[in-house]
Amino acid sequence: MGSQSSALMSLFRLLFGCSHSRTTFPTTRVGVSPDGKMRSQTRVTCLNCGEELPYDWQKMEIEGGGTRGRGLFRWLRNTSERITGHHSDQ
Image 1 (spheres, rainbow, N blue to C red):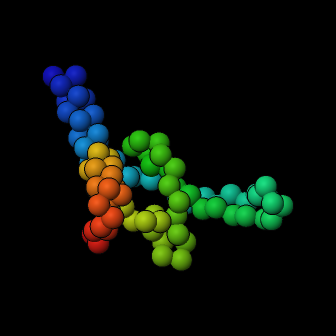
Image 2: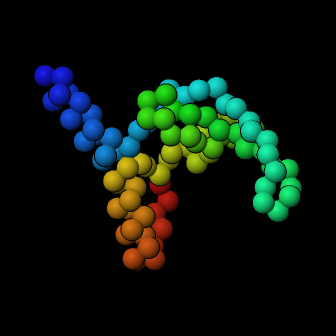
């Protein structure tokens, strides 16, 4: 039963991607870019899938917000938009 549940979750993540509903507290890293300028980058890490995501302190949310979908559906939509030249405004 456990392996069926795990397989179902893997299929779900393939189709829809991770929801990134559990993340670490935002952390800001400061460093020097290749052109010699100081840069800072604020990120959170998803505790479910381990992906690092850019975070906007001003809006207090993950940048992009994930409003355009994730996973296979995002890839299909982006491919369709590239081929047709039409952009959906979801």
